[in-house]
Length: 430
Image (cartoon, rainbow, N blue to C red):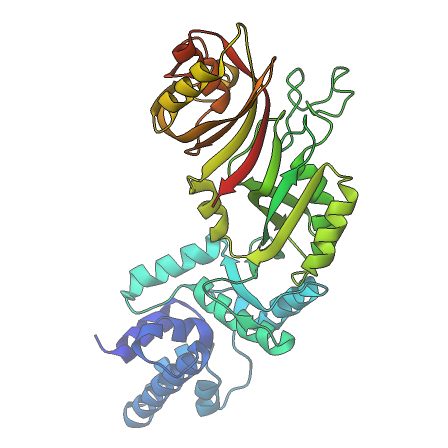
């Protein structure tokens, strides 16, 4: 079947605009818009109709074309305008309206790239499917593809911003059925390292165990198990700097609530959600966070990073270095302690999920390695140890044995119960 035969079949279905006509053949040529392609096809068919009319006296094809082609009307000597397109219901006559809505919605936002997406109504999708089926269309593109492109071109020309198909900072979503527009603003990711300088602060917000975050007398109706967290001490200044709706905190592992995070700090990424501002003075942000955190948390090395850094942090298996203050139920000599530590250095540790975290972790037995464990000092009532180990090793249980759930352990080797009284993370090697 020739292209003009197919065009003739499309015309039989009802009035159709240049955009929708040209879109049915979008994959057959380049360098033309669908509107230009559609108009050319209508003119070509009108010329064929004119030929038939002059040679055979039959003007039926011209008259059929007249409802959607001004050229055919001129040949017939009739007046009027194109009827509303039955396929898009006049949508492509409203491109400027959608572009105006988008430009208004984008005002006040900092961005350099965008992309348009369209949610077509069920009726428009059904109209496309009917035409493709009835006329055997096989070289078309979807209505929403053209809508995205044409509105995108208008927005770009009015804002000076560029369309980015891979990493747009904002996606403009057109909801045709509701005649509304929404924005999906790409998060801004800020990487750094934090030191936690006081004990008793979790990394992220913990819902109250009693009310599960709803608010009750036990948590003073805050919904929180602990009054503050590393996340919350960083959050407010990031929201202010980026004019963001919220933040999400992503850490490279976490330390226990009663542990300090010393040394070079723990890597983290804070995600600023729906930011209005993307250019941030990171030095000033760092100073603001450290000032407001009042000596509880300090951050440093802030930098803007791509989204992929979150997954990199989450999946990294970093070695950790800990300082431990350990007590014993019975006296331990320096010699027997050093001997026990030498037995653990380089050892493969088999750890069943510790009892203290079994309510929130799967009950598994994990293999982790101790690289080195050494004695820093021995006092009458405690010992100071330093452990360099593989990430994911529960060092408190490495010392206590967790009632036999961790093997080998310092307790098991000594034959005397040992317990970590204080724990400090001094290095996260990423």
